[in-house]
View 1 (spheres, helix red, strand yellow):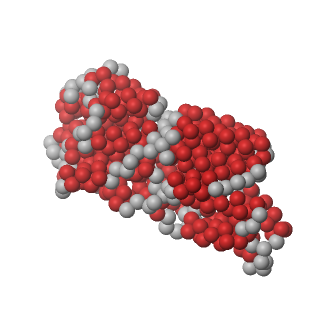
View 2 (spheres, helix red, strand yellow; view 1 turned 90 degrees about the horizontal axis):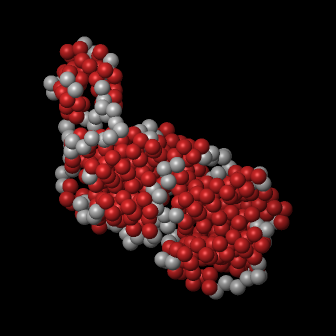
View 3 (tube, helix red, strand yellow; view 1 turned 60 degrees about the vertical axis):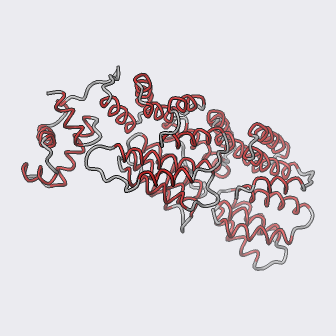
Length: 487
């Protein structure tokens, strides 16, 4: 049994939890000494995202635990409760545990710190997680040290303290690389770093964040979703990244599906597919998985409400919602209680999309959290001249192309000059694109333009897309108006 356990541990620390789990199952079939094998199997199953099987394995190990394993498995059970959002129960579980083992104590403090933060005392939770780092250093356990850092960066990010989270995460990755352990132990830290880089608008750093093969599929997929969202916000097609993320799961995963719905909704809005974005968000929050955090639900509701607003105000031939008021009420009713400063702002965003809060105040809140894209978006929604100019400068710095177009449309509607912008010039169009634009101005459909210019409908569609992009127009009517203004 001991040799099998050591082989499985070696595989687990090499970043091969699937192989480790196979080794453990073989050993469990031939021995009665099962507790430590089951404990490691629970860890492998949890890392692989097989939550139901992991919990069953943990309960079996608990029934067999003796001596030092009792405390270790009790902490693991508290960790499970934490992952299910049962923070108060997890804390009660931890209060009954006594141990002199620094590694087990570090594990317990890591779990307790997260629970304290999500029970409302973020500063206390952060202090507890710093104690966990100290205990882990004292124990010499790399596993517990990375767990403490992973939980600390998670709490900091969830509290909107992304700069500190990113700094600690990057420092930890550097240390792990020096020790040659980065692929094996860095999964949670990499994911937390990815979410903070996304929030901070440091999208080039996010692009450069590698995802080693040793990173478990569930974490790799979520890092890829962060990269996909950053791509969408810059006007790039994120579909390949989303598909790559989906391929890391062998079967359906409700939690990942809900998280993926948010990324797809962001991408749909960036492409002007507002109705699709609304439906993605509505479906995801209709019956969300229990493990979906309050912050994730808030973002889904805010994204859906924003897309509904876009849909109702869009020009051109757009199919609007049958009952926009009912959709608005449905999404507002799904808003959970915020758990942290960033959650509070997302809740305000949701109400602002429904016309019930101040975009100017929300922009100031995003500034305090150092989230530049969200601040620029709020200023765009605010629509005041100086707010729009501020948003325009920020959007250009970020390379957020869909947002810059949204700002330009708002400014044109309100006749607000954006001080640095160059007006779109018809001279950037090819001769064929100018012909297409002229016919657009006459209200021709793509089919009618194709017939008049002897082109395929598909080719005309491509020409129309190029015209809209070059003129920074949101739709056909706006492109025709730009043309009229400059001729």
